[in-house]
Length: 149
Image (cartoon, rainbow, N blue to C red):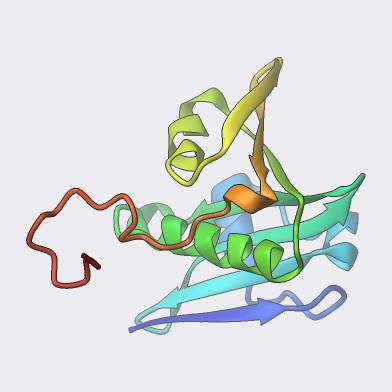
């Protein structure tokens, strides 16, 4: 079973931090005090997390990660959609993130466009009015029972 939980800015992140440490090799930082964190469990095991915060007129996403042994199960996609839902529900005009070039395709699937490259990071942008969380909208399956005609 898949479950998710939100952690408000300033809440105890004891359940989130082991996932972040396992993937990025670092734990809590000052940004946690202003971020909403989401944690996704798979079969009662913390498996994926990410965070969102407001800065300089835009919502920012960061530290989106999935434990290596839990990858390939669409948990990263779920975390990204949860973060975008949070931004959308707060009338985001822009959602921004910085990622390594090899991750750009993952974010581009949900509409993020590369804006600039600095060193080993690509800054990506999604305009708030382009947030699309309907996974069926671009579905190519003609016989899908969820497709609206």
